[in-house]
Image (cartoon, rainbow, N blue to C red):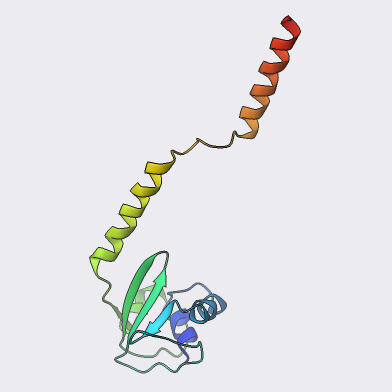
Length: 126
């Protein structure tokens, strides 16, 4: 089975075209080597998928005939992603908040209208 189809079948990606694009960008690796979407997958291989700044690691247990339900996914893959990968995202979230608080920066449309109204009121008084 092709790697892009396999990743779509086990619900790593929502569509097969997204899986194909990820393979072309080098976000999917087997044994540390980036691969094409047409690469054949066999049982027992270790697949590393970079998605949302996390390196997910899956071991291939079997090959499904078609896309499987969410409850059946664990029959075809084993998730061996280290917990440290998920902790990195929490640190990235805190790092983003450090530089710029939400709501600061460019004024919103409402802020701009308030500023314009304030400026009009001050010019009328003069």
